Length: 321
Image (cartoon, rainbow, N blue to C red; front, side, top):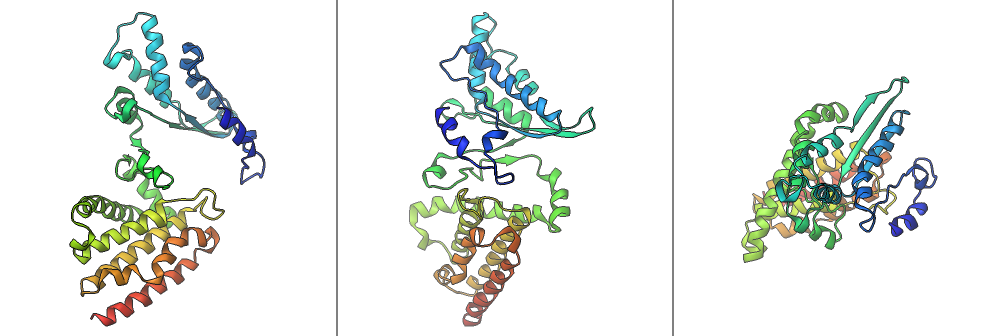
């Protein structure tokens, strides 16, 4: 908490150019505080969020962490001599979690305004065991999950969200909104990218055993495209003025460009072109740097990159046709 209080006053809201602390409320209940205070902190936070929501604001609530809150709830329950349930948690743990998350949402206020509360609840299970009650009940209620990966953080890949362990059951629900927003089949592109990343995970196990040279060129092309997705789209630099925020249109255009590169590359390697020639194409580095070199207002520059993909792939295609 000391670090938060020291750093937050120096953060600037990019919309208002004012200190971010002016729009931040901190509820601090550390582990050395009374257990009742730690158990009550989560309700204090959501009540304050609802207060501002009723004034017509859109509030983001970060609860870090609901696992520590559940441990405090278990301790209070034990002191009240209530009957313990799974792993010592009280039998009403699931109900309390549901009551907390159901307070999020978009509402029409009685004063004629509209407001919302968005909850991001962090779960930190002991030993990383996702089968423990707090994690299981949380996943059951919210139907989506961001799995933070320590290995990604160690590799300086931020945000360190594991794309294979994370999921959302709202994909079909929002696909229509995406199609209307960007005018393209977002769901098809998203599924194609996930197929490539899943296949990369499988091939990575083989590479660890026999090395990449044992793989056919088509499978090494999958590894190359997956690298572009990871480094050119999923990895983000929050301190970069351009990469700190990416518009929806830019995200879709980047993904479309990488998938187009994969399509052209697969056609070339099937004709016998060595994968190292594709890896060494100048446009590959250009694709990776596009997230920080092309601003949200200059998306048209991505068309030039796609033309470069066409030109360089066509040269290879002509050599191996």
